[in-house]
Image (cartoon, rainbow, N blue to C red; front, side, top):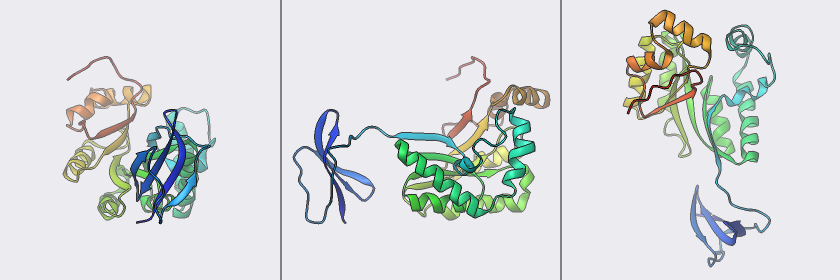
Length: 246
């Protein structure tokens, strides 16, 4: 297998040689030399530093940047974002994702954890750009059972297609997902060893509405359903109390 050889790159203050084989650093040393089939890059003007990992994204929304700015979450979503997204095609999502990944690469971000729609288009863009990602297929009750089944099927279809890309189930939020769908999503994630990726406790209104409907805060409600576990990635989690349990 042809390797990439970085010559004289700066690592922790020392000029170092690095060989990358496949998608792994195979050798890091001041003494190694290029092999016959190596592609050699003179890297003395560069440094190797720890990369960034983006824990929560909607990459394709790079196309919506600045749209309906400075608004409360629910009017922003209901009156602007969701109607706009309903008009987006898979090509739009593919292009928006490529743009976002290009920006990530330029910033030193090598992995992103996404949740969005038409994840086959997101997967295609991610695979072509060569970055690592976990791609969450968004589920909400208003999709209906047929689309929900297709969403779960999509996760299985793409789970093993790339060594760099994994799939996850992404119930949108407490205000768009019923208790039954939360439990279904959590059980699916555990059975298929995937991440459960969701928005949680993002606004004061979300908390007040959840307490009014369920008698519990969003965090406590999901905990009462048995949803919260070590495989969860919860985004935002802004409005929480100080209770700690071990």
